[in-house]
Every structure is written in C-alpha cells, then in structure tokens.
Image 1 (cartoon, rainbow, N blue to C red):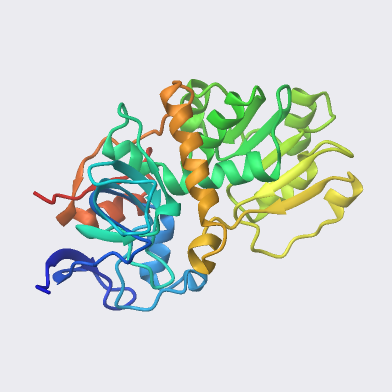
Image 2 (image 1 turned 180 degrees about the vertical axis):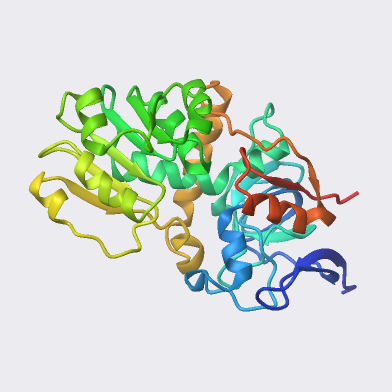
Length: 333
C-alpha cells in the first residue's frame, strides 16, 4: 500500500516551539473515522501540555497536540455506521494520552467522540466548542442537575467554560449570576446573566444581595484555588451543590459541611485517557448542536484568524488571555 503523507505540527520536546513537518497520514481502523481537519480549537491546556506542566494529560513527545477539531469525514472503517464520507463533524478527539491531536491535516478518530455539525455552524465555531461545551454540560447537567428556577452562580462567566455554562443554565430555565472582572461585565450581561464584580463584592455581600442570604442552588467554579473556597461559602444550605472543574488543590470542607451542601468534580479528559464513557461525549455534542440550532447557545470567538502556520502566534494570544475562543484554521487545500 502506498504511504500517504500529511502536514502536522509536532511537539518534539517540552518548552520548545512546535515543528511543522510531513508525517504519515493515519489509516483508520475498522472502528475509526478518518477526518480531514478544517479547524482546531486552542485551549489553555495546550499551553500547559507543551510546557510539560500538565502530567495528567500523559503526553510524551513527540506528539501532535490539539484537543478540539472540526472537519469533513474522508473515510470510515468497516464497522462504523453512524457517519459517512462528506459528513461535517466536530469533537474532542485527541491531543493527549498518546492520541493524535487536531494540529494536523488528518486524524483517525473514535466515532463515539464525534457529532454531526449543524449546517448553519461554521468550522471555526464547531472547533471552538467541544472541550468547553462538554465540560460545562458535565458540570451543570450531569453533576449539578440544574433545574428551572434554580439560582446558579458561575465563577468566571466570560471564560471558555463559563460563557457556555451561562447559556446552558439559561436554556435550563435557571436564574444565572456570574462573577468576573469589570472588563468582562458587558460580556456576562449580554449572555443573560447578572454580573458580579468579584473585586468589589465579598461572598457575604453578593449572597445577601442576590439570594437574600440563602445561598445559590448551584455554584460552578471555573477558577479553582480561593474561588473554590468561596464557592463553599456561597452555596445554599442543605440542598446546595458546588461543582468544580479545577478542584485540584487542598481545601477545607468545613464551610461546605456547615452548610450541609454537596460537592463534585469534573474531569473531562477521562474518556480520552481511559477509553471509558466516550459515547457520552458524542451524546453531549449532539445536544449542544441542537441548542445551537435553536439559537440557545453560541460560542464567543476571538476575532483574529490564525492560519495553520500561525500556531505559535495563536498560543501566545491564548497566553495573553484575550477575549473569545481562539481557533486555528487548518488549510488542507
């Protein structure tokens, strides 16, 4: 069989620039889909992974990074039934644990991780969504079970997971509040949440102001550290639930225990790393696609367009914490 090559950005060693080179195009197994990648989402985890400061991703150079992808199905394995060549798809499909990522022209991926894109969704929008949307869904729907009328507090509502979380909670009929900086106030308001300036308001102040001192039904922590500690103080007594995507530090549970609340954590990468629960990721993305079609959810994109050969610039922009999800457009033509 003739070997077919493709372009990819390779992490040859930690803390080094990614290197563009030709590498073998993957051949899909019987239970895989070959996708021609059109766009790759950039996440803070990409920067930590290439820096060698994210051991939980189990990344060993040389590696192709890129967690999120959107593209066109090129070929399907003999056991694949849910997709066909020509389908536009998106998913959280690799970039960690030795699984090839999306900073390449093609990838062979597990179809359980994919969903069909809505026709009205752009490739850039699709590539922006998987990691942040799945994380927000697992936190607010799977773990916290947000219901109509719930008072939901989302820390960091202008960030990636935060701005999707606001829209998910709103779609569930919740009353949504969000902490953020003064600079993010307008973004939070446009998303339909009540902004809370964390620099000007103490936990006691905003709990009193917005819940009459009762506390929030659900608190989503997207920041970790002292913000998770604050979350334990902000939750409603007896029935309140705190969920965190960054609960990795050492924390006192006393404030939560004294309020008789509950806590859970989210580890979105687990299906990729273990192979278990992958079909649920595809299910979530189908729900996200439906919400997008209904006009209930839309990612905020960074305005700058980054080409495949501008990955270093895209990663620097992510490090500068610019507004909107950064996406790299992969040119396969």
